Image 1 (spheres, rainbow, N blue to C red):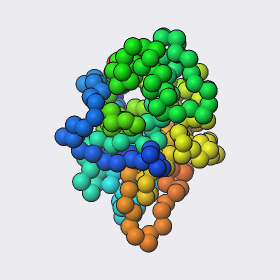
Image 2: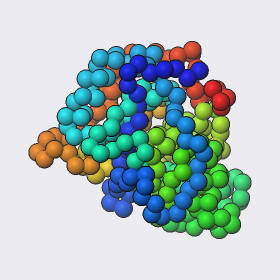
Image 3: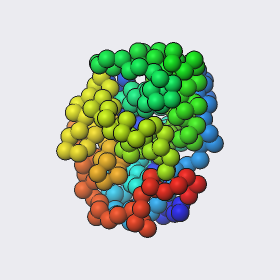
Length: 283
């Protein structure tokens, strides 16, 4: 069911967060931290923008504007398909990106597995990253990086990453896999990785300590340093990720890029009438 993209595709280095959860770009040869073994890291399925409901010329124009505003990477997915991929300013597909605001939701996902399969007791709110990681390790008898590898990262078929507490460093493509889990209640390409209802039940906590909402008009927004942002729109099955840690001095930061891109949709259903997330793996 994978479709060929027409001329350009999508993978973005995302950086999103505030304070300790800040995003930082690292190159693949940087081997600091503990290895989180992954799968073969095959790319997400790709589709031409028009086949996923976009006005392609408008999407191209929006992407060009983002680049002029200093974006080093931009990614858009719809219905689990990559429809836009751009890199610049030294970033590339193999660049590792610190988890930022996605590190904490990933801990929430892993906690769901630990609670149901290993009897872990969730700590009382407010939830803290170190407490969740320690609880997972105590319940499972494995370090958090080992647990994450076995129960989340490999099921996502993500490329090997690096755990440098308190954040995970992984390719932008693989952070998009995590974004798909968040938008589909723990399901990825037909596989329920964390128990149904777990992610939905913790939606108010997925933005971590820098939460702004997290839902604003049905859109989840994760903030990063400078103009770095990630937007998730579960109702449209849409994810937008932009990296711009050092915006042009004096230039306004576009806080509405996610909304702009969602407004460029003609909002047609997934090609073939089904989302990838409702289909079996191995499509």
